[in-house]
Length: 207
Image 1 (tube, rainbow, N blue to C red):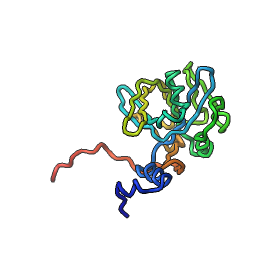
Image 2: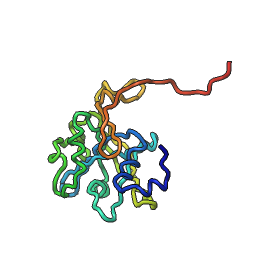
Image 3: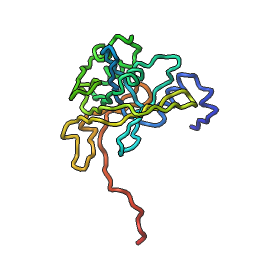
Image 4: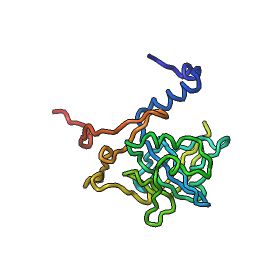
């Protein structure tokens, strides 16, 4: 099967959306926790989280266009300056998926979808108590992507909270032990399982 750019443009909107959202493979499923100026919390699932660098420790996420739809998560990030990234536990994917529904601003998805707010060490944004691996973030920069109106929201890691058995002596995180979830497209969820570990690849010298 061979699908060209022209074929993609001719597809039904929903079919095109599903195709392009799933073609890159499994992405991390994360819940973004925020809070507004009146202490209303917000929780939303994102699959666009990406590592941008380790020094400083930066993580980016793509925000969909805000010109026609109010994005409560992004508005809270801009207002508060802080947010959390929480791995979706693989036994709570249905609840996590439900956070994508269009709740009113004054309705907390934490409560509506069966999650528990957790505030730790005075950090001004709520973590998901049920998540095993969670990250406290500070907003650093937003970059507008003119081609489609999306925004690359860049944050710096302030805190990492995870079980000790998920963290190796070398600094690796065991996502299987953390019960972390992968997502393909907008609504296909996967459990993560470890398969192999290889040494740092070097060019092999001929014998």
